[in-house]
Length: 92
Image 1 (cartoon, rainbow, N blue to C red):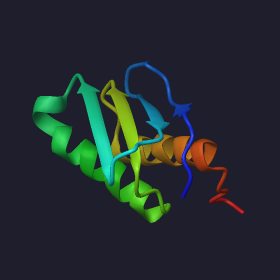
Image 2 (cartoon, rainbow, N blue to C red):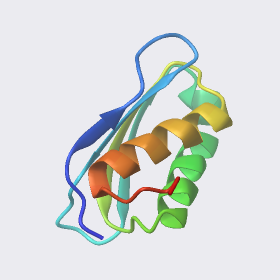
Image 3 (cartoon, rainbow, N blue to C red):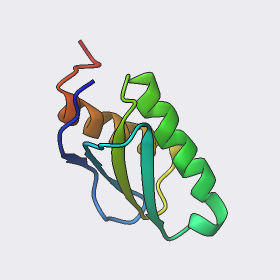
Image 4 (tube, one colour):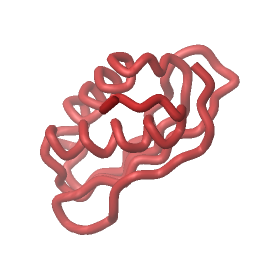
């Protein structure tokens, strides 16, 4: 699936900013900056990867700037960024 650069989210407390961009490499590359990375970093990355794979995005660079978002918020922001990035409408 073709990916172009796209964003979703904010830098407000309890939210997460997701940036998706094309990658020349195979697979998903997750760059995480989080205020709670020491506690929840692996879970945040897991939610991002699972959400993207469910949407058919296999190759991309994802930069996530987390401010304590819950899993449901992470999924929503990743989904919104993926829809903007690929043009695939998951709600249709």
